[in-house]
Length: 337
Image (cartoon, rainbow, N blue to C red; front, side, top):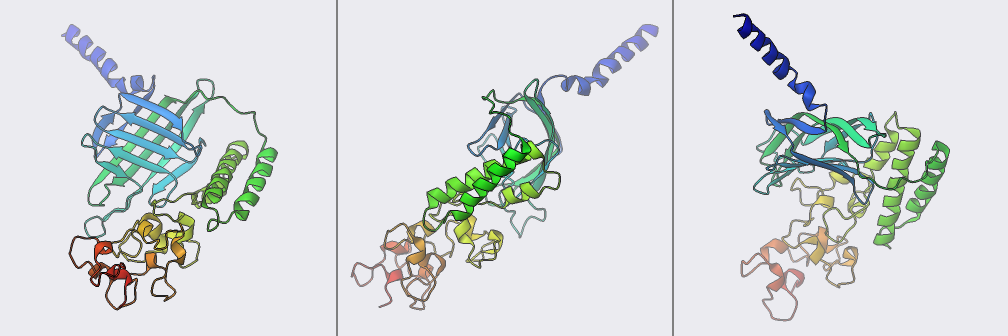
């Protein structure tokens, strides 16, 4: 009996301490939809914008955590229209992301989450933190939940470190980058604007590292920058603020639940926004076939004939561009006669 008791005590000591043993070495783990999940491989890197990206896999699910910077103690919020992101790609290649909107008819919970960097061990060059998130597939009908997520001592890339920048120097560099950003005109030079915007974001992140960001003010500015063409429709996201109020999330011309800057068919007329550059000059804003003051990419009746563009698909093949009833070389959806 004494031997049995000793065995039980030893077993308790070994297995009861398993959680502590896990965190004596690098790890990424959590609960996926309530079930224990632990990575067998993990990796950290920085993307071209200087954002920290942590990837982990259990050889079935691949998760990605992306935050604006390596800032300890900052609670990086996740969700649609956010620079920070978490995603899961399962074994069938289906991706769930916090950047995807939930389907309003079948889902009640938002796409959201938090990534919190708790430790940056500069001596070992590793990062540790916590996370949770709800992510949706592209249609918004299915969700994945990760809770109690932890990444511990994940190695950071061995990149050459720049000279240490003081807080005062970082502020000056931010001011210089801000001036260049404000001077850049996205409607005249999209590449120049995008480069200036990314440089401003990088300067702000550097200021966070050098000065801290206890109020979150710098992070708010970073999160409010739209440097790219997020939906690849030929218009920089910043140009898709139709009502001009500075909030890209409330511009949804076709009222499909997806804001214009994330919608590749802004007016829902079945013609992709990128294909509504009728004069092919690279500027979507100056194509207004019916001259009603609304450019074609925002106009669901391009020729103003009272028939919606989407209904001018005579042959029913889903492509209104190849329907030319009077054979005059102008497709019906652009031909009011």
